[in-house]
Amino acid sequence: MSSRAATRVFQGVKEQIATGQLKDGAKLDETSLAERFQVSRTPVREALLQLVGSGLATQIPKRGCFVKAPSFREMIEMFEVMSELEGMCARLAARRISDEQLIALEQLNKECENAIEANDSDLYYRKNVEFHECIYSACGNGFLAEETRSLRRRLQSFRRLQLRVRGRMSQSLDEHSEIIEAIRSSDADQADRVSRQHVMIQGERFNDLLAHIEQGP
Amino acid sequence: MSSRAATRVFQGVKEQIATGQLKDGAKLDETSLAERFQVSRTPVREALLQLVGSGLATQIPKRGCFVKAPSFREMIEMFEVMSELEGMCARLAARRISDEQLIALEQLNKECENAIEANDSDLYYRKNVEFHECIYSACGNGFLAEETRSLRRRLQSFRRLQLRVRGRMSQSLDEHSEIIEAIRSSDADQADRVSRQHVMIQGERFNDLLAHIEQGP
DNA sequence: ATGGAAAATATCGTATACAAAAATAACATG
DNA sequence: CATGTTATTTTTGTATACGATATTTTCCAT
Image (cartoon, rainbow over the protein chains, first blue to last red):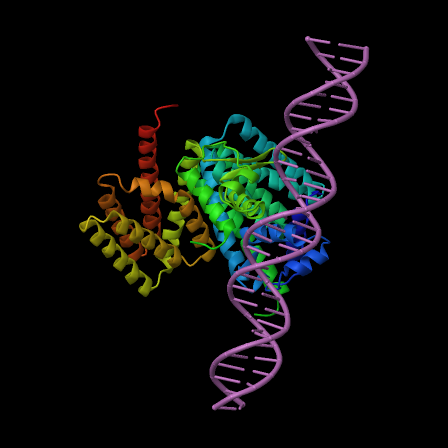
């Protein structure tokens, strides 16, 4: 819990966008937000600035600030980029990973396995994040790692949903094993290919899910 | 020239970082920046927020805001990512480009050629940007296009330098032709490969340049 | 009714003031 | 001399007020 009002507002609005309380196109009025969060306009402005910066809102010059929830199309686009970045991380990791990191990676995959056996999807979720995090660190490109993390965060709320899909967890685990195998044998191309696939499958699942939820166009 | 003080400060500091007037680690004191730019602290804070957001500064909780110029290593890392994104754009464009866009692309390359003949490196620079911009638009993934643009902007000041290197312009032009050829024949893999190469060469040139300028470690 | 001018209104950016928190300095005590 | 305590000063974060500018609304003339 941050003591900063600006951060509170930022997180709060972000949360409300994620949960759908604030729908796409909803107006983010500085004054009413200030009232709602019991703060002045100053921290609200900072929060809005950050929201715009992270692509969750749009600023139209003298008309106001509006929620810009990613459209279905944009989500697919983001997954497309995510799979590229994830693939790149894996490809580089296959070439650059250290022995210790490889061991850590295998350890994490085992912990994912345990989580599945215990049927603990929350634990699986966390270990899964750590697994990928480990690959990012091993890619030897800090900038790439940070960009990938950032995009992951943006897709996170949706990904969380997917992993609850029946059977997804164990399939995901198999894919992890394939990735490890490719990295272990320094097969960069294979690591790239499998990782892309791993993300794109999630994108497709997401696709299915949305198609199921939204009956509209 | 923007009428916004916050933007002026943002651009100003950014410029001073690029030109080296503000060195890595320099403290960005709110009060003194406010004095220097003849504004109050409020717009300065907004500017700093944006600087941090775009990775040019770091915020250490109660100690202040500091310039974080990308290190040599980070620059290389950024180029590595840039080449991946640029390659992805080209790969997708090879599959998705429309006839009109292809014509526009060829037109732009011709204009680049003209700029070289006229020995107008500024014009070449602008047309070169448009050329790549055209590929981004043609990739059919708006999110990717925006990310790539954003990274391009971050590397821009350095790239501008490179293109003044003797002979680089005409070599760059040849590479453009190769990219167009690959896209025209819908050879996604080739487009990808050539585009990556195109960026990485710039990274290497940048490397040479820096090695020349910096005598230190 | 419609086009347009003028008033009313909303929004935005900035300045300034104030309060809280933390770092630094000064100081006292063991 | 070290250490812990208190005071001072900086730095931050937030509130509020004000002016400028754009937008919407109202109202009038045609």
